[in-house]
Amino acid sequence: MPIVMYDLAGADPALRFSPYCWRIRMALAHKGLAVETVPWRFTDKDAIACSGQGRVPVIRDGDSVVSDSWEIACYLEAHYPERPSLFGGAVGQAHARLINAWADSAVLGPAARLVVRDILDAIDPKDVDYFRSSREQRFGMTLEAVQADGRENRLAAFRDSLTPVRLVLRTQPWLGGTAPSYADHILFGTLQWPRCISRFEMLAADDPVLAWQERALDLYGGLGRSAPRV
Ligand SMILES: N[C@@H](CCC(=O)N[C@@H](CS)C(=O)NCC(=O)O)C(=O)O
Image 1 (cartoon, rainbow, N blue to C red):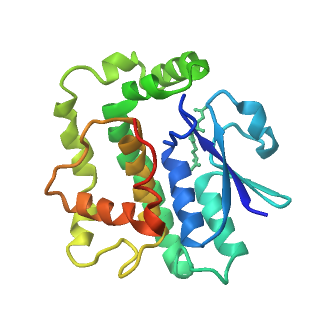
Image 2 (spheres, rainbow, N blue to C red):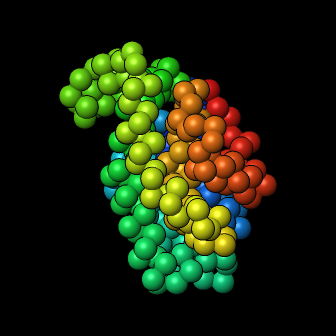
């Protein structure tokens, strides 16, 4: 039986744009595990009530229900040890935890300030009021103000947040070294979110992070590249 994954979707059920869900889509593909994704909207709280919380990704694997992308990655590694490793051992897992915290605290915020208003145009109509009010509360201003004219001026903060990645890519093709690891999937998911939900160009054409993203888009039969975009 395939693993079932609740995956954030837009008005178009094929549009999947959660940074956290993308991390797990890549992790499942990395491990070669079959998945059946269920399109989930922000207000579909009942559908994932079995997980005891209200956010995706959530996976159901037989009798096990697991939420939170980091917890799911650790679950997959622990329960499918015979499959290709996501972390390459305990030290790699500990380091990936830092990448996870860094992406969540240093990259997602600047990225959100660039595309959050675009999300409103792509989500299911039943989610619009909830999304607007919850995000405006988070930002302390209207979504239009967050993403006001001149968002190009805020690009620098987002691009600067990726400086550590550029330094690493000078000497290795993947954050995992010679092959992609969960660290790559964390960053890939983080960037796949604006890539799918907005047409705003986040990365400069000559950015080594863009070259890395292009390579990552081709992984697992082009899983990321074939994903519908707005
Ligand atoms: N720390 C969680 C964060 C999950 C999360 O925030 N997911 C968003 C979608 S990108 C969500 O489900 N939001 C529901 C809401 O805002 O009510 C993880 O890594 O999975």
